[in-house]
Length: 180
Image 1 (cartoon, rainbow, N blue to C red):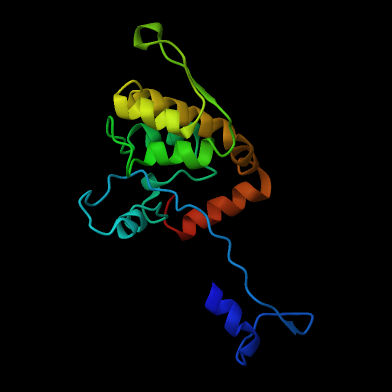
Image 2: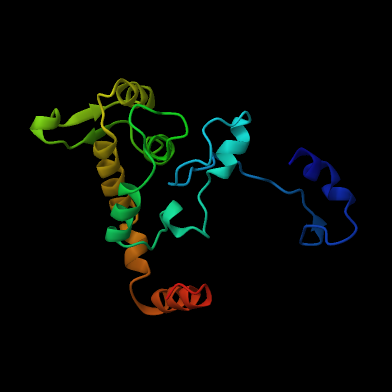
């Protein structure tokens, strides 16, 4: 980004323009959300390379949750997601909880059966990771919470794509992508 901003004013071919003024590009950087698949190799020397190889992929629809996925699809994808017990590094469900849920919530409450310890209130990402690493939080309990949270979060988008022109446009896109 720094180089792009430095050379933006010098571009002669296809410069970024607004009102006949050359503008400098701005890039917004965010955490790369992990895909739900098992990583190719947990022994990679280059962690950045491993993170990049694990990102969500549109070409593998089960590695990601899309805003128009049905409740059943979300549950299925999260249920089969890679989430090894007591492992917090390169764990997509831990990653999603940290970056998609704790970015919105100060605390989370996982609903569990009494025989599985009862409901669990977690007040921070640090506490989440600590409980998970110690085995006090089972992957299935966390997956159930994440699936239900995403279902509620994405409800307005599912509603939007369920009727009228948005539904038609989504169906046309799926035809083009061969996903009918």
